[in-house]
Image (cartoon, one colour):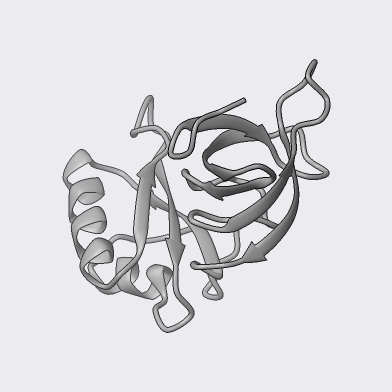
Length: 138
């Protein structure tokens, strides 16, 4: 059994994706990274089932959401990553790098954000063109 405050690897409900969560109590954890899956996000308080000792604990339900929005942003040059991260952090979003620009392909970041900001609009306002739709979905 995990200790309170320990990071554990979990599997998201209905998904093959795995990620990290902070163990809080039996059956309870807080998501510790920005998942790609649409049904869960950073800092979500989740119910977990760890009864199957042969597999990772399974997130069975989201109890509380902190960041309701999530999107990918794209950048062509390394300085753009740093600028996006700094500005988005200042407005209360959380940014995780998802691979830098390579061989002509843009770098990607995943952004967890509150409903009152629009990361795509912010990026485009900074002159960093996006291939993401205006509603934050891609």
